[in-house]
Image (cartoon, rainbow, N blue to C red; front, side, top):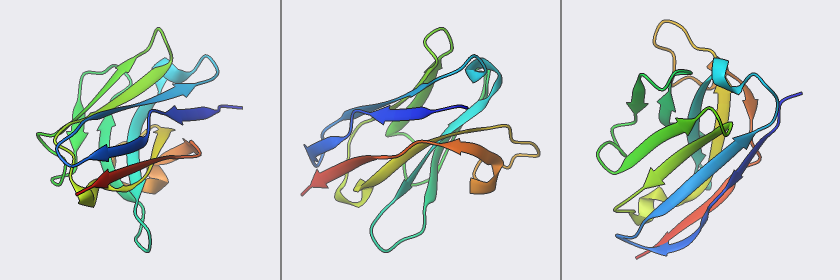
Length: 125
């Protein structure tokens, strides 16, 4: 059974930075694609960023492009989300997800089999 554990969330002022981490258990991490999603109160869970199993390709939602960076360390079974120039509208619970997508479906929630419990990010104005 795979477990994903996020960390690094917290309270930050607008314009600040946070780095989220997601550690995966098991030996399959390096063969799976990874992503970050977020869910604000009263809203649907939305795609933020994704990275291929090899780290060769990354994808971002338009709302975070140029501010957020996804990366992974397969030796540490960990995926990261570096968040810079944070805005109040980035406030949400952030979830990491593991799956194998095809046909460019990296943004779809149903492309992912495993989910973490989430970490809260709050950006004050």
